[in-house]
Image (cartoon, rainbow, N blue to C red; front, side, top):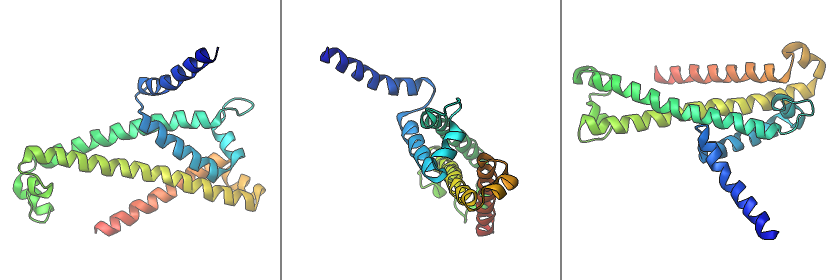
Length: 193
């Protein structure tokens, strides 16, 4: 019986990565999602987290639902980061040397991306832009955690005022996360100017 139980446990452990790959997510997506959900749970508190993620009457498996949703989000972010990076690089590569160098401190496309020629620079460009795009998406996830922490604090100060102002915890988190994102984008634009 012990051998059979061990085999079942081993098969179940091996099935998790296979199941993860079936929906387009990777083990890394699952791990990143679990970290994000753990941070959200800590920031929001058990009651708010369960209310947000637990969809059935007894709010069971809220953490699992969060991880599943966030893993799919991670996979989409990764895919979009790569796709948008490739689009941006195609547009940059298509520019004339004069236009590109005017916008990039007098450097050609290949020089700017530290490559021997435009073709190898394209790969470096896509990699660089994909990493930056994914980093931007990850920052939005962090904004969600920061927003949850803020909202938990506001809720604990005065629950009645909180409900009047935000209706519910999710509405507060959404509003605050959008504010944080807009503030960061404005700061980035000021830095680039």
